[in-house]
Length: 446
Image (cartoon, rainbow, N blue to C red):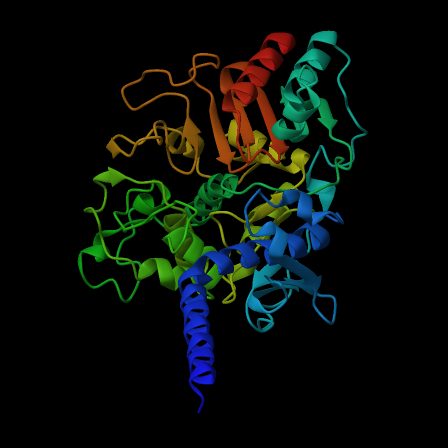
């Protein structure tokens, strides 16, 4: 073989090997990007009824090379890099949203039918509020005082305000209305607390239950339901959305998310350290819904009694609800979740949760807490630390909230008999703008 031809062939081989090695190294990150895009495209269209899923993709270097299309039978979405690499498919499952899996998951049974009849807010006409101060507060929440670029970055899409159990004000961004379901991200964790409360009320589950997984035969056997709800399980975790971290691996590369989380080693003794972990909530839902409806459990236990007909809790490929991250609902429905909490679990005269459940669930965890998790309680965020000091002085001390990625809030203020739900797409969440909006609403409605 001529020398030049040999050198050229070797160069091709070396280049090919380099490309292959680079792809193997980068694949976890690429899978995260394509998984996010496929799931987002499927859910935005099938759950929210929107046709612009790309507006929900956070800025990242993969966007120019992402290729997203519907599946051949139009029951999901597929995303890849340039149409050839790191392909991921999200399948639409009626009643259960969209699930990432190589092949369409097996049926999980029929979804419980949910009617709006049990929800007093569902059929009300648009209620913008008839008070100038309320109108001004909503305008602040939507960034009407900001320039176009900053207003777009704020990204508010819906605000709903309940006072004394009545719908008193709401506003929606262009392209959104009272019927548009929106993703709550980690507000789903607060809903998980309510789901567990349902099972406790029925005598099915206790917060002190341990030995929760067959494979937990070591010190993990001491992990309780309470530990998982309060993020004190001690399971090793990293919530950073980055290359090869547990959270991205769980959401975008694991068909059985609960089993993946359960496989993690202990980094701390159970109950001794609070580390924010979507894994804890996900494995908890795997545990408490097994044999109790699986993917259908949130619909049966919460959505149907509350009349949340648009609400969806998506599941993994095994049918486990992804209770850490994947609940969709309209802003009025999210506000209804807050109203249930404000009413300590009573709805339409029926007690759905044990008496005192919400007061217990909103006490901040009294243990060593990782930086940034001050005020974390039992699926909810309190406005006080365990020592009683107030976290956000703009809000009443008794306020508590569900909080999710991209600036999702359901704020509950018992002393004001008020609930505020704020939904939007704010990758750089401005919590000061959210809390100041709530403060303005509180003042306007006093």
